[in-house]
Length: 237
Image (cartoon, rainbow, N blue to C red; front, side, top):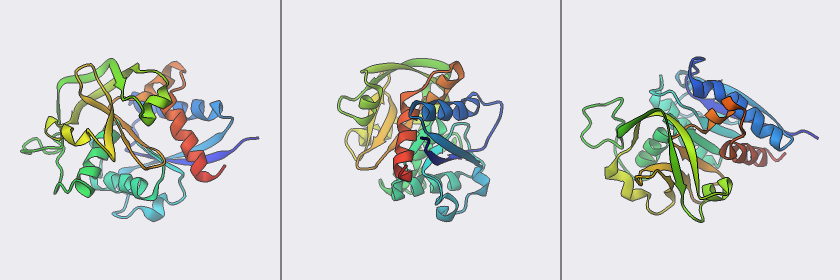
């Protein structure tokens, strides 16, 4: 018996982006693992309204994908807010990680107009700042927080993951990630935040690295599999 769930891929599709090449294959591999079927739709940020509730209502999960800056930053943030507020399973990777932090900073931390240094290089106190060392076409070890959802998903204390990014959480905001509900559950060897999850949400995980790249080598990724499973649970199938 096969089952089906629908996923919105929030971002501006670019066939040359490795992450965008890997995402459909990553979803297929994850669905095959659970003998399920899934559908996905690329949702260009330029099409997203200030309130995307009607646009996203028929999706069982939301994946905010890499390759930012997006054409419509406010639209991407609105889609993330929709997923967070409605309990839709959410996965944010690379740019999706950065924008999940921006959305939370604005909505929950009370930061007025949280800045992303890529969009506003002159920002005095950006939430998302340039990395001390660029992680473009790089890989590194991630250490997971014991007892976290992400640690349980991986089933191992550490993993090697691939990156393609230049920006991450500013050190000025890292202390806010020490405790929930949005908290750091994966850090690199230097202790920098690389994975976050939201306590009390059915599935809300974001990573600075790009787990979808594993699909380019035909490897199923545990985080994508967990996201797909959560989407099927949301769909009730």
